[in-house]
Image 1: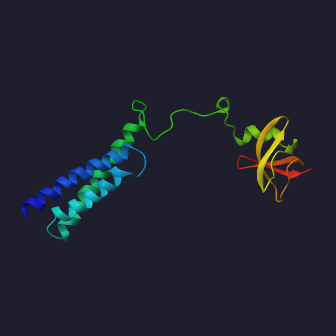
Image 2 (image 1 turned 135 degrees about the vertical axis):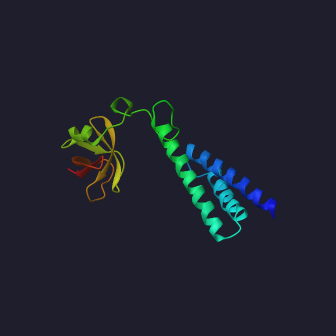
Image 3 (image 1 turned 180 degrees about the horizontal axis):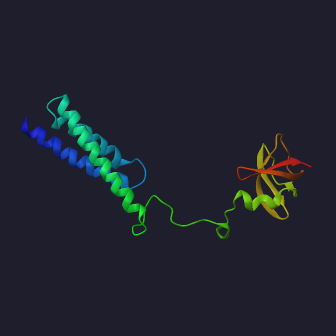
Amino acid sequence: MQILTILGFVLLVIGVVLIGVEMVLPGFGVPGISGTISLVVGILLASKNLEQAVAILVVVLVLLAIMLTCVIVVFHSKKVKSPIRLEEELGNKDGFLSAADLTYLIGKEGITTTDLRPTGKCDIEGVTFEVRSENAFIVKGKRIKVIRIQANALIVRES
C-alpha cells in the first residue's frame, strides 16, 4: 500500500511538470494530455479517502495557478521571447491593409475576374481585390462599383 502512495506522488510531480511544459508550449498536445492523466491518477493513488483527494486537488490547482502566473509574468516581460505572442507588427509595408486604408476605393469601378457568389475577385485599376457582392450573383467580366467597406471587405454592386 505504501508503494502506491509513493507512486501517486511521483505521478503528481510528473503531471505538474508536464502541465508546466504545456503552459510554455502553445496548443493542447501530448504534454497537456499526459500531464492531466498523470495528475488524476496521482491524486487517486496518493489519497486514502475523498477528503484527502480534495485536499491534494486544491494544492495541485493552487500550484498550477502560481506556475501559470509566473509563466505569464516572465513572458510578458520583453526580456524573454514568448513562443505564443507575435512580436512583429504587420503593417502597410508588409502588404497588410486596414479598413481605413481601403476607403479610397469607395466609388471606384472595376471588372470582375471571377464569378461573385457572393465573394470573388475583381480588377480595380490594375489591382486584383477580393470582393463581396452586395446581395446578388455577378458573373465574370461584369462592371462593378465599390459601394462600401464592411469588416475589411469591399462590398460591390453591378454598375
